[in-house]
Length: 440
View 1: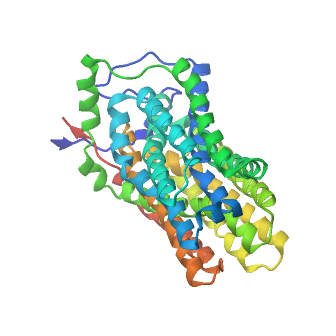
View 2: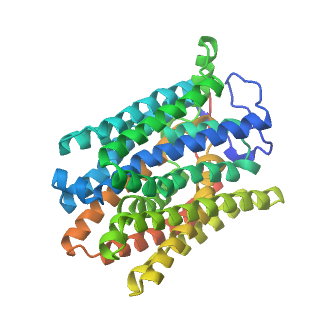
View 3: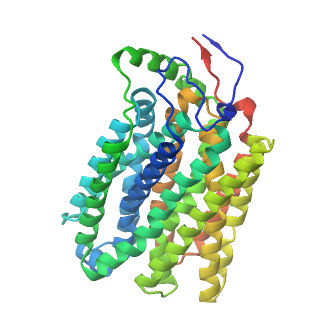
C-alpha cells in the first residue's frame, strides 16, 4: 500500500467535519443539536473527572486515612492505581470508537465506572479500594477517545479549538467542583456517602445521553466501509509519526502537572500550608476553574486567528508554549513564605496552563491527525496522559517519603516536565510529520 500525500486532518472549514473515506454518512446535526451534544459530552467528562479525583479528597481526610491505616506510599499507590488500567486500555478504546461509533460503547463504559465508584464506598480493605480504582480506570479510558471522535466527526478546524476548550472545561471543572463537594460530603456525612453519591450522579447522566444522542453504531453493510476507513491509517503510521511522539511527550508533561494538582493539591494545602480541608477545596476549585475558563477563551481566540488566515499549526503551537511557560510560575509559589502569595501562584500557574489546554488538544488530536484515525491516535496519546497520572501519584509519594514530607522536590519535578513539554511542542509538532494515510 502506498501512502498518500499528507493532508492534515484540520483542513475542514465548516461547522460540520469533512467526510470520512468509506464511512456511511449521517445527516448533519442542527447547530442547536451539535452544541447540545458537545455540552453533554463535556458534562460526561466532568463527571468522569469528579469520579477519578474523589480519591484525592478522601486520602486528605483523617477518617479515611485512619480507617485504612494509609502511609504516604499507600496514598501514592491509591492515587496512581486508576491510571495504570486507564492507560492499558486507551488504545483498544480508540479502536472501538473509530469502528463502532460513540453512543453505545460510551454508555456501557459510563455505567460500569459509575457503579464501581459507588461500590468504592462499600470497601473495607485497601485491596478492595485498589481493585475498584482499576475498574474505574479501565472503563473511563473510553471518555476522551469517544469525545474527540465525536468532535472530529462534527466540527471543522475553525471551531475545533472552541470545541476542545469546552471539553477541556469539563475535565477541569470536574476536580474544581468535585474537590469541594467531596470534602463537604465527607465532613457532613462520610467518605462512604461521598463515593456512593458521585457514582449515582453518573448513572443519572446516562438518561439524557441515551434519550437524546443520535445512534452512530454502523449498520452491518456500513461496518466494512467503516473498518476500511479506520485501517487507512494503520498503527505503524501512527507509531512512526514524530507528531504523535511529540504529542505524547507534551501530553505527559501537561498531565503530570494537572494530575499532581488533582491528586496532591488538597494534601499540599492542608498539610504543608496549614489550610483546613474546606479552604483547600475552595482554592482547588479556583485553580481548576481558572484553567477551564482560560482554556475556553484561548481555544476561541486561536479559532478566530485561524479564521482570519492564521496558520492553524503555528497559531496553536504559540498558545501551547505560552501555557507551559506560564505554568512554570508554580515554582514561585513553593519558594515564598507568604501563604497569600503561595496561594496566588498556585492558582495563577494552573490557570496559565489553560493557554495550552484546548489548543494542545486541537493541535495533536484534530489539526494534525487524519480523520479516520482520531480515536486510535487519541487512545495512543492518552497512554502518555494516563502514565502521567500514575507517575504523578507514585513519584510524588516517593519524593515526599525521601524528603520528610517536604513539597520542594515534587514542585521542582513539575518545572522540569513543563520545560520539556514546551520544547517538544515547538520542535516536533509539524505538519510534514503527521501520520500518513495509506492508499488502499
